[in-house]
Length: 401
Image 1 (cartoon, one colour):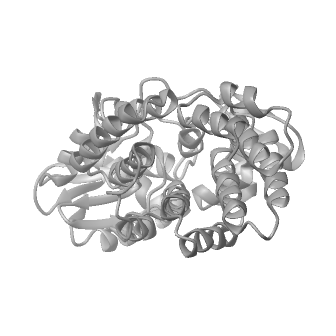
Image 2 (tube, one colour; image 1 turned 180 degrees about the horizontal axis):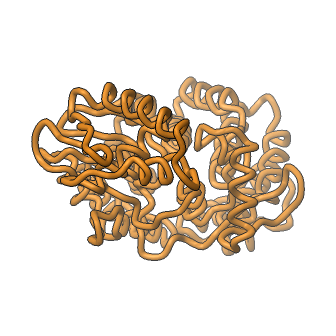
Image 3 (tube, one colour; image 1 turned 180 degrees about the vertical axis):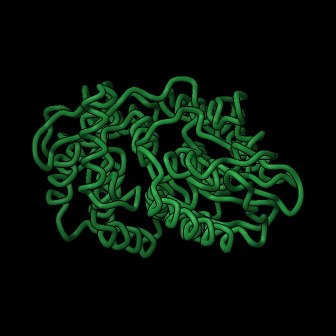
């Protein structure tokens, strides 16, 4: 490694991409192209970073497989940062295998972290946890150790395990300080704020994540409008794929300990202007389905004017989103400050791209999101949701817990 390359690499390690570019901006050899690509990515210019990394991989050639693999890992990181979730996973797997075969275990571990971060982003938490458990973080340098702990914290936050998340974030903060990289320190601080920001609402009171965790562990029957489920203790009834049943459960939960009239249930759950006989017949059917679904936790009693939810034990609490927004899940992903394509949002949300595009168009009409670019290059972004944690707005595979 010549002196200029060494100086540029040192500048990047210290979090100074401008300094790195000053050393290698005019060079076209493989190491210089790779360092320029990484520096451009650190500056947020992903459009220029990826072509530079690809040119670097070609410049290294087949005789330098480790260098080519490192370029592939760097490009995968840029793809993740730019929310290109369709970047071929097999290329990252191949690069990681090459690095492991040649003894570059640190960069191989970093490649594994990128894979886990992608899984976390699209909500495949079980798979992310399994892959993370196979990694031993003890030999990692401070920067990679901070990233490892951020992934641990991210999974814990999505699982609503605030104590492990707080512990991991403390370790990440210490590692980031030892690494001395300002951007990494800022990322850890941003993640830590999720524990202090309001994450949900109970009637008129905002709850932090630890308070939500305590509520879900209490004897109360919780109608969870953040995850579209009803649960009590260790029993969970997911209703995310049965929106009418969940709407009825929430309405009855909000009316508890009283009842709710048939007319109001019809107009609010079915969005009908007025209740006719066909609506009343449908209501009887849907109430029967909801009664069967909630049988382990509660009953539904018919009253003179409507229906009432009756828990088998404890009280009923309706946990609502901190901000009621029809497309809250889309806004939650965009609130990370990165730019997203509609295809990446569809993959992360588990929805069709057309459904996501309709949501984005609706939000754009309300000036809540904005876009730039055309066609496949079109990207969407929005300012972060102010003073709210978005953890409970993200879709979660509750049935896996």
